[in-house]
Amino acid sequence: MQQPLAERMRPRTLDDYIGQQHLVGPGAVLRRMIESGRITSFILWGPPGVGKTTLAQIIAHRLETPFYTLSAVTSGVKDVRDVIEKAQKGRFFNAASPILFIDEIHRFSKSQQDSLLGAVERGIVTLIGATTENPSFEVIRPLLSRCQLYVLKSLEKDDLLKLVDRALTTDVELKERHVEVRETGALLRYSGGDARKLLNILELVVESGAAEQTAEGSDGDADASGAVGDAQADSPADSSAGKIVITDERVVACLQQNPLAYDKDGEMHYDIISAFIKSIRGSDPDAALYWMARMIEGGEDPQFIARRMVISASEDIGLANPNALLLANAAFDTVMKIGWPEARITLAECAVYLATSPKSNSAYLGIDAALALVRQTGNLPVPLHLRNAPTALMKDLGYHDGYKYPHDFPGHFTPQQYMPDALQQQRLWHAQHSPAEQKLYERMVNYWGERMKD
Image (cartoon, rainbow, N blue to C red; front, side, top):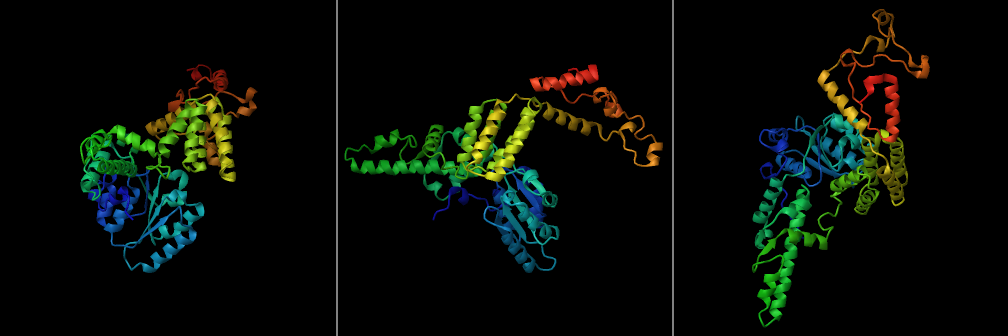
């Protein structure tokens, strides 16, 4: 059975590897590590089709050490333990640790990830994990702390064009097809920085053009009047005999005929989840439901959808409707309990609620402003009256002295300094005056006066 073009074009060496120059370019961290022949455990995080698995396979070819591969989709705890046992038995004294590559490590459960900890910590195996999901959410903290994290980026336009040129000039199948690429806009747009998707689209378009040529040739053989030449001249894929011409129109036509041919695993989810979140942010419930339906039909993990709505409830709705976060969190818990197909109803309810809620990102902007201020000003001392005083010495030094307990005052409030001395007048939170947030703003102005006015 013939391999797909994407597999035939998979690089075998770093010199053939396209993209990720910040990691594998001359002098970059991963190149130095690979060329030294000794690597430490690390996790590759990035969107689909940017070279995570390829990097692991290049390491396997380059290093003279046992290399084990597991897929988190099909492997369980027993499989992990079996590999660790083999690695332990097969390791020689002072030899480099065997490498364990786990694809889609974000799909491993907590217990599966726990089973890796001891082996990674003791150096029985060197772990290479690949994930399309944020490891902060999907990889347990003890395992993450034992691994370096390297972020891979979507391929740039120049990288993708180089990949197309290499495929057309080096692939044994495409070289025989006489392909001419006249326009690349649609190829690049539909690939979305994903090398595998780009090659799948290219292969689909070329095969479609070749099939048309074959059909036209058959028609010509049956036509004694010589109509073959006219048929070929009118072909959208082929403006000259024997040549497959790729244009934007041709790419769009092929993908409309077979829209899932290049995305069988739902790998457009980064684009679609972005459209989904932007629809919620833009208060369009119809668009939010449409993009959610696209994700559901594409086989997306319901927890992935629910998790993004929890984030949106905090980032985009926030104090304008605090109940949004409660509902989003309840939806996430419900999805965990019931799964498909009923979870679609819960997700839809939450999406419509978030999309139709008033919007505010004041908390989001406030914490970012606070983080920037902390990085700028460093570790300013806590005012003495705010410090805890559990010992007599601390009391003698003035810790806690002068602190006013707000509950002892009318309205449970009394003015006093809470910021460091150097930042007493610093503002970080700015209300955005949605109906719910306006009440919070008015309360703060009533408490603090001019200091809180925007």
